Image 1 (cartoon, rainbow, N blue to C red):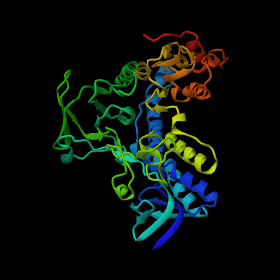
Image 2 (image 1 turned 90 degrees about the vertical axis):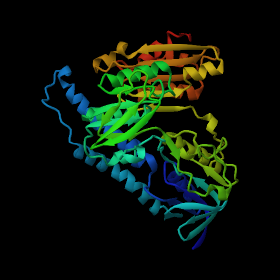
Image 3 (image 1 turned 180 degrees about the vertical axis):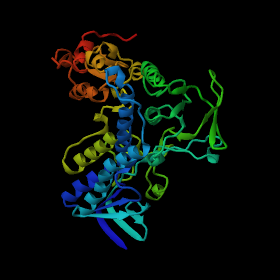
Image 4 (image 1 turned 90 degrees about the horizontal axis):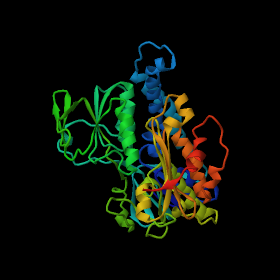
Length: 458
């Protein structure tokens, strides 16, 4: 069947459905295509289910620490089937709602199947041929399968297949010491698994400053998670019902024997089966779709939003992509990617909240900056909760007095970071915060104190 629309949206992550609704309400005839699960990574295998699991893991962790607070609990055990059932019960409405809302939206037709470009304005879905002057790609990404020798000989897990795990691995070997690997590693250690993290680099999450990487290593090691750095050559081998990981590490070359392996070595875009070459859409060497400051591709009438454009990789950046496109197309509001400040969180416990530039970014820029730091051990709210690991750090431009970047690794860090992020968007001087009166006792109340003691970056 051939059908013509005003707009075609490929994918139903955090950009596509909201854009479909805005366009449909504006009177545009919209087709939206989904080949698998509605809602994208966030709803199905990312933010929502993992944070539900992390919440259960934290309860187990705090229950084991109950005696520190004068509370007697007795022996603590984890029922993984109930943990998984809770995750499914909370997640399911989001998953089902994502599809039902689209199917109920006037002016919007939903297609289920693989989309493939036949030209710059024609998309095939099964036997259907859809034509539109405007096409928006929101196909997300998936886990990378690295070239590890022996990987094809063993059963392995990734962030998606972990969602079906309703048992407790005896010993989980995590390949990858960045955001996904750390979250799952700590989570399953708290559930009761033995955990070993194998990291190819010389430190965990090398995207972060060295002091943050070191502090996070200390946090996870305090929970008896083994971290093996400089694992430059990893091999996998099946031995009976166990998996043996050969690890070439300078400090410890001994192999690791475990029951299960989680591959957490990064993500790649879902762009290899879209027929982008038929549309002439340009990609980089990793498959990410190249976009300009307003998310337009090199082909007029085609946009790329969300993880597949390589310009964010988070739920909030994908949603902001929708806001940028909708602002430009529907609101006469020339919003741009370059207006966006980098911001994200690592949801280990305690969490890391990050905004703006790192120290490495600042050094590359050549700016003169001031740095403030405050240890969580000196924060009254953290001491009261017996959660004193981590620190806060802020980087300020010495000339403009504007905040360039901040990191809060500690209790409430994922929320407290917004008090600085909002000031950064306002382009206000740091003195607006340093002179503010914050509520006691909170973590946020020490932000002004930190800003009152800035020093030149060494």
